Length: 101
Image (cartoon, rainbow, N blue to C red; front, side):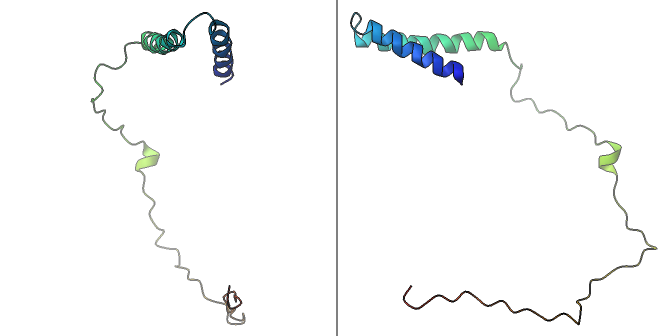
């Protein structure tokens, strides 16, 4: 990000210095050629890439931990949650909005 900012500042300085001697059309042409050259350079440096972009790779086999299922313990009692009868039930009241608002 810093390099991009520095390159932008350098480009603005070069364009400002050359603006009096070179036409705007030629400066914009050079800018466009710079983007094209950068794209070609990126493609060359990126390498060949995969042979087939539509190749479907098989899913890896699950490991023992992934294929294991959790079985409930039949000897354990089933627990149920019961409400506390001594607790008072709370009633939630909606916020009251004054009339006309």
